[in-house]
Structures are given as C-alpha cells and as structure tokens.
Image 1 (cartoon, rainbow, N blue to C red):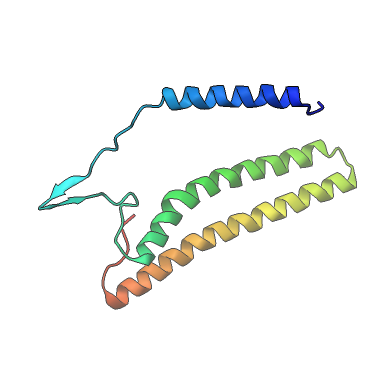
Image 2: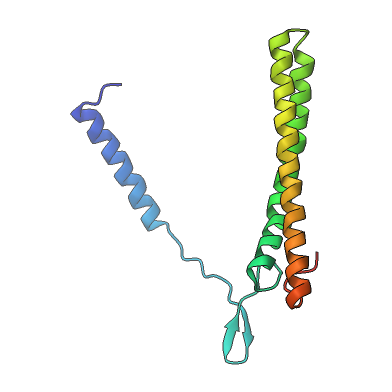
Length: 136
C-alpha cells in the first residue's frame, strides 16, 4: 500500500476519531483502599511473606516462578516427545529432539535449583538471625 496524502489523511482521521471516542467514553476507576491501622492506611503484602529481601525472593520463586516454570517444563517435555515421535528415523530430527530434551532437562534442573537455593538461603539466614522467611 502506497502512502499518499489521501491515505495519510484517512488514517489520521480514523486515529483522531478513535482517540476522541476513548477520551469521551473513559470512566474513572477508584482503587480499593487498604485497612485502617490506627491513623494510617495499611496495605496487605501481596507476597504474604516477611518484609526482608530473602522473604521476597522466596515468595517470588515459590508463588510465581515455580508454577509458571513447572507448566512450561511439562509442555517442553511433551514437545520434545512429539519431536522424537515425528522424527520417523531421520537422524537430524532425532538429534534435534535429543537436544530439545536435554535443554528441557537442564532448564528444569535450573528451576528446581533456584527453589533449593532460595530455601537454603532463607533457612540459613533465618537460623542465624531469627525467622525472616514466610512459611510455605
């Protein structure tokens, strides 16, 4: 499509129409406030853990990274199996399937290693200076 003055004029008019439409039809959304704690407003911690860096690390790994990574690992293993089954004896496709399976295994090991490392750090630091990590 060639950009001519007529096309640019049509595109500009369409963009201005939608911009005006969005500005006119915009409604205000008010966020829900926190709970009242004395004279201040307290907001809950979404990671339901302590307030230390290690607690945040452990909560992020346990609540976000592991569930998403676990699903992706299962899907990657299934895909690797699919590659192996559809290889039909072709050596290059079998090699590709083996590489995908190896990469998936390494990724899963890194994922589980991050979980172990976060828990070891929290328990070690927590043992030295008191409980700093959330309970799972």
